[in-house]
Image (tube, rainbow, N blue to C red; front, side, top):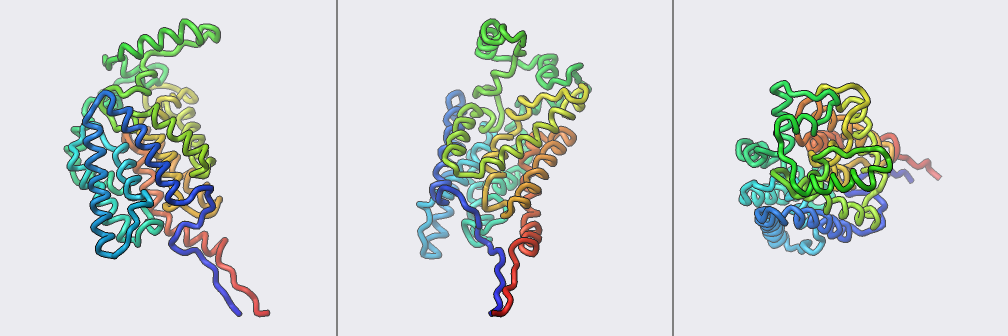
Length: 352
């Protein structure tokens, strides 16, 4: 007999948790960030509620039409919460609801449902909002740390050390009282023994301070969530690790150049803590559905994501270049899977 084993549309990955378990843990991770952001900005909860209603409502209508019940797998809620943390904390909730409905109704179900879509539905919802209402989206980010930084750079602002926070301090970007207090305490106690000194502004990156996407405002809680995801073996740990390593290396080598600094002087911490980097690493790139299947294919796509993230953000001055990088690489996944199928999975059995 002859046989032909090839890749199909469903995710063929070996993970320690079921799809449903993975979705609920992702919901928990994103939910942490939403809660932290909501501590100082209640509108975050309105955005999250609107996105959840849009996603679950759309899924319910489609389930009734197809006589299925998949709400309990948590995928619609996960899509809504991932989309939420990618949105500005001052965005109108109606846009969040429309983006979530688009993510579930168009991107997820038009390709056959959970496990069949080539693009992460939450990322698609973000792109839908970003390009359908560009003025409203940009207005919701007015005054954010990255907007202020790139505006200053466009006006010729530089720093001798190539420090983004150095440029922001020159432009008068405010530092919170909590940042000043914590930074002073660290410098006078723990860091005093090492001779190092933490500049002001870094503590703010971990606090729900100012305007920005919810993931950045809820960064500390999001990091706790990613630790839980990693410990639960929901994702392959090496995928976000590879992305952060390559992206961090590029930032370290070249990241200071756009801000007036030299080679090997880029600010990795600032790059990781802003621009939705952690969302891209742990919730988008690590998604087993929208990635390659072989380890080699995954390595290539993750490395390409890191490279494009640097290009879009540090050369193109796009604040959330990591999201565009993931979307672009996702669009190449069907081609990559075809190559994987021919190279690794298609095998013809010889007649016995």
